[in-house]
Amino acid sequence: YTITRVFTATDDCGNASSATQTITIIDTTSPVFTDVPLDYTAECSVDHPMADASATDNCGEVSITVEATTTPGACAGDYIITRVFTAADDCGNESYATQTIRIIDTPFPALTIAADYTPECSDHHAMDEATATDNCAEVNIDVIETTTSGACAGDYIITRTFTATDECGNASSATQTITIIDTTSPV
Image 1 (cartoon, helix red, strand yellow):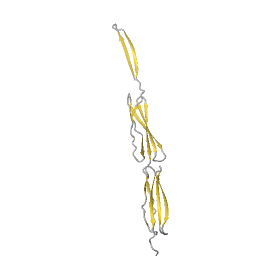
Image 2 (cartoon, rainbow, N blue to C red; image 1 turned 90 degrees about the vertical axis):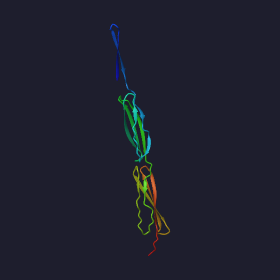
Image 3 (spheres, rainbow, N blue to C red; image 1 turned 135 degrees about the vertical axis):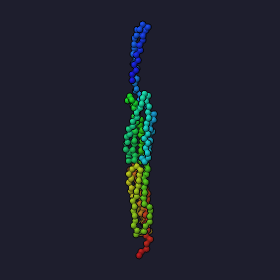
């Protein structure tokens, strides 16, 4: 804004002269951030706080806007959120601050398999599938089966090793043992 000051000097006989002073007030100072949320790293399965920033200005009100950009990582549960805060005053002066939030996926999938059991060689041998859940990504389950011979043809052990792996490479394994026995006499 502008302040105009008119000075008038008058002597005892009424003679006068005037002079004008013009004071132009300008705002060239950008707002100053007083609080910007800290950078942090969090698991993909937990809440991600999105706190606000605050700023002050030496001449007036401040408005703060935020723009968030998500950059994908190596897998679905791994990414970076970049939040850019812009503090602007009424005269168009701006300041910027950035918060970086790194989201990671480190928990192993929860794997559930059937219990070990011991059937007779003539019984049905159930080969139940495993199930797995993950709080951040899709899960793939692989199974490796090995058979170990026993003392006779009707005795053997089937070992089933299940591995659940999520998109970020976190894996958990569990083993089911099926012990096949032959305890029935010939008829």
